[in-house]
Image (cartoon, rainbow, N blue to C red):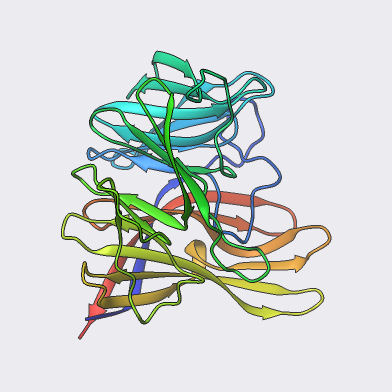
Length: 317
């Protein structure tokens, strides 16, 4: 079965104003590595989205939104995870990263400094936004994934395991992508060793490992992959495209499709000023039902709008 089209539905539209209580984005957000501001979704349709200052709670059914958590000046959110009615936020502070454990309303239940085995405060590896996955027991897996901004190749990252109190327990290097299934099992790409904890996702032979990375796994055992690619370039113009693919547990490719519109294409017209025109998908999440959601940005020379979008694949045999 091959996916040749998809339907885009907007779930949430961000504020366009600049007041302190509006969920606006900092001036520098568009990057070719596919990393933007991360979000997670609960089974009941509640989405939690971070920018540098806020956590925004939005209901995709009622379209209502509430800002939950502010950070102090000089601090910012690096990543967010969700499990068992608990929200896990990792924030950067000058004295080291901090783990916030919150309820679904954003009330802080516990707050811990991220510490290494020798009890020293530290900052986690990885450029924000961080991928954060939480098991039912509160174990966290954290990594910063991306791709080279010139060649669009995936960058090996450090995957870190934290306990429920923010203490660093384990590190794995050379990981290019990761996903947690509904049983709490962690699958990775770019790493083939087996130690009983991480599982190497079988890579489809049709995809190039230099550019594709794992981003999700659903209940049926399908893996989801993502890449960015350069379509066109000159002294004053760069066009970047985004792709998603799905394969089964045995590595057989089910489909791959190029994203466009509000979910996939970035056009950089002035590399010196970093001015982007067009749409660009900045963060992609695949839930356990296989539903794909993208945080998209539209930027022109005078304004920017942001939104969350759901992709529904249409298949043809």
